[in-house]
Length: 205
Ligand code: ADP
Ligand code: 5GP
Image 1: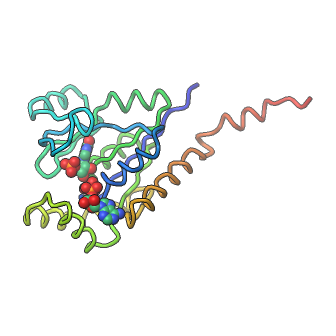
Image 2 (image 1 turned 120 degrees about the horizontal axis):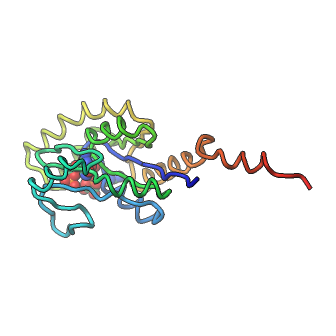
Image 3 (image 1 turned 90 degrees about the vertical axis):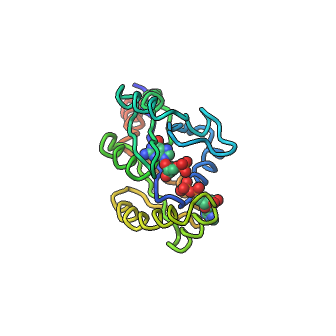
């Protein structure tokens, strides 16, 4: 029987650096697939449909929800975001590991549906640094910065439900830690029963 792929979910508060860390991780590990999310938000400069996101209208997104086309979906700061179900199912069935970079509500929904997933919570080194990163991104109004910072404390509390925590102090360090977690998950006894079976059936000449 073919081994199933691993479902790896990276989430954390807005501005922690999920996008930055996952982009670097994917550049360094071409064997890891990425689940391209769908969203109703407008593309930012340089973003391409089908590469960064599938950019959908609100109507098209709601139609896909009704058709059961998402593994999870959430309303994140006023826009819909969702993980298309088909690519995740195909990857896992084909033995392909796949990465989801999603918000915390979405991750909690995936945790309920797919408890076999690997859930990694990305923390900022401090709240001060989180604020600095959100400001530095330059995409927020003072009100939306305030909203994100207020949400961050409650979101960080939810991180205690995850299996793994990684502090995004430097991008390189966070990427290395995620790779280590990924490798350790591949070495679990429960996921390698066939290695024992081969030895059990080996004949001594
Ligand atoms: P998220 O996807 O979690 O909302 P981003 O990846 O957009 O966060 O990162 C938010 C900002 O913080 C960006 O300007 C990014 O360049 C910066 N950033 C990300 N990781 C680090 C890091 N380890 N050190 C310093 N700045 C970082
Ligand atoms: P951005 O608009 O900055 O690209 O993303 C905003 C937030 O939406 C980020 O926290 C990102 O992780 C989250 N997000 C991106 N794709 C998905 C998704 O498919 N599902 C959910 N629940 N959140 C997502």
